[in-house]
Image 1 (cartoon, helix red, strand yellow):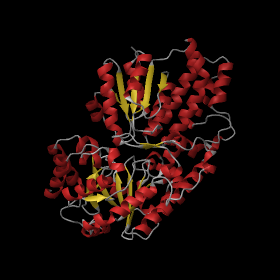
Image 2 (cartoon, rainbow over the protein chains, first blue to last red):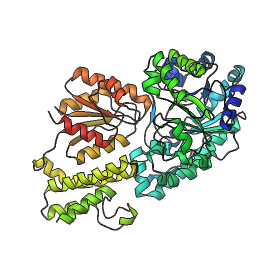
Image 3 (cartoon, helix red, strand yellow):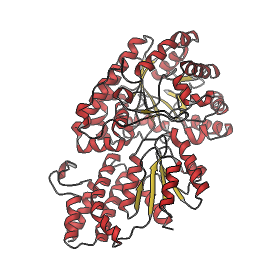
Image 4 (cartoon, each protein chain N blue to C red):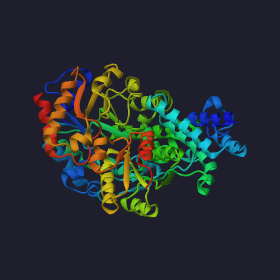
Length: 342
Length: 222
């Protein structure tokens, strides 16, 4: 993100209203490689293609804040890889990590990884480091330390059904697992911040939050997210595009000041749920409208979305969730135009 | 007799699997669905009556889930308790004493390892008297097609949690429909909508396990 974009983001979080409304999209491997015209595996395995794809996005859409911006990642394999999870990388499909925990007893033996040397993390960090001069030459800076959240990683390491069942049957083991993952994530986030002093934000992605009730989240989520967001940064950004009515009231207590949600809850309702303390990034339906709609439909639905806002402060226009596969340049332009003209 | 049957329903609703299960806290140490089902069958209660109690329990927890009084973890525990009962009832399905309503082949689509939705639907559907063939997660089109050929007349359920795997779901529906056009396909999962299901060419969409049961019961068995 450029200095101007970063300032705009911070001002929006503080409640300043911009005209036109700011626009942002979370972009990563589900959308970027195919939009750029390369296979997902090529995007992962070629640092050059990864950089070119990201540079093209910022060049084609200079007014869009891409979050986190130049995200060096290997899909869902990124963080679980450090625990020894086998990653599967089909040529042009989304990679995924295999389970490493077969039963609750395995949790005791699970080692805490070293993000400096374990799994794909050194590759992820080094790619970003090597690209840093070119990113900065393009007027952008690395702004976010990024990780998937502890509940999301736990569900990859164990299987989501098994993890959620363990929460009910053996809550002490579930908490031990989340503790280990949180400790690892704290180190990982810290390492990113140490490597790139321009980082002034933390971005966590966790949709397993959405499967829990408030009481469950209070026990198994809240304390850990509080720790992870407890850093001296300006932006504390959470993505959860699964249901969020139960967890949204906790966002201010978690330290979150920027939230990207699914499209099923309106921005007006979320504003109430978060007591107007969290800036919102959303929430046009990503698949049905942004990816599958015609440019005219995208424009109409975007106008509807902007028009529905009772208060235009602390809002960044985007889709609900990350940019889905298959969104065309035309549809993004249509979205931008509709926001600008409103 | 009625008391045991009612208790089975309560155990399903509360997710009390067996005596050693520490969940739920206020039922710690009490017998669960597992022991009660065994006891009921031993006392001569008909398997149909037990199955009906299970359905009532699942219906109640499903309604509470719809009202956001309980969440996925509680629903998973209820389904686990239901499974404990089904283990005792399985022989009756096999002998024909209890007739399955039909067969559901279910799996999470290729590229997606999320099993919550798929498992919940499988367990609830099974508890409602359907036979379930669970293909697991990350299932490609060919595996579904092979399973359909092995289970003629089955209904197919596709699950996805990730928005990113919706494209795979669409491809699988298309492949199934092109090779085995009479197969009925139902889809579900967090990123799905009725509109998306229609676009894919699926026959049904269910936002929750109860919706899947309703679809299956109305679809019947070929």
